[in-house]
Image (cartoon, rainbow, N blue to C red; front, side, top):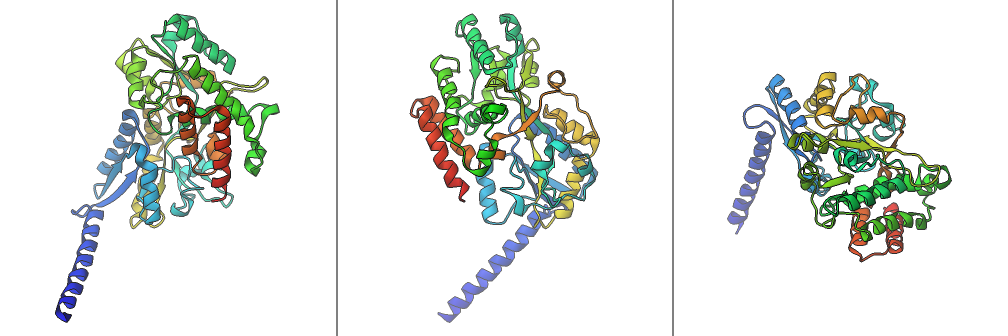
Length: 419
């Protein structure tokens, strides 16, 4: 029995040592190279290509470093939560708006890097804290609004809307003039988060940007009356009832957006990013525009919804922190930063390079419109995005009324705020 126990211990020790050697070999690529793991939330082909091109150039200039890029898509958050629980984070990862609240204890401070002095001040509150710590490098900057088929709007004599009333009138006009052949507002609700995206962007004009309807302090203090959220749910339910949304709103996928836009089957959508250039590449006769989120209340203002689009943070406990920071330094070089921003059809997050992309003419046209932070990132506790998604889906499925939706939001808001 003692011999068997001794043999078992030897085998266990051998397996641990072997595993350690295997991990070391994996970290060095088995050929003397240092391998960095990188996880990103980039979801479409154009975005990934822009980052992968930068990675290829970095590896060419640094042949002793290899970068293993991963794009988990909808599984990103769940995968990163598991890695946080195991304290085994990627060497480089996207903080997707949660650099401080969710990932703060895992990221290295980047404040000593040269690019920090050129960071757009609009991103300070998201990427810096009061002590001066810099949590992540922004690969680009979002200016989310509503994408629209400029070709169709011109055909139907519709001007890009400035207010919610104008927006709904535009949707009704599309439905009438297209005889139901075009989705007035197309939402890919078959994937988590896309319905939440609509609610999140419209929550800002509903609850923040109108002086007489500004509930920012109440939301921050936890005293917000959630009945003020109900009108937004009522608007979405009314759109569904009037047939102003795509019939497959609960099953449609983001991957369908490019082809449908290229076929002139979509008039408006909250899908952004490389939708425009990708659709025009498929059909050069189709032009996609973008307009700021419309004002909802009288006296309210239009607004872009934004912050960082994609980021790179370095895991503070990485065995290859030096190499990880070296890659961040590389992508922050003006010429590389410009290529990535333009390749993702977004504005640069740095002030020392000006980008030109598919939507530049629209950004210039609305250059006086303020960029407001994503509603959930500023005013809601972590975890509410999933609640916005699930309640929005239930509303459009008819299993929740607008009032019930608001009550569910309130309940989850209070529960998650205590965690």
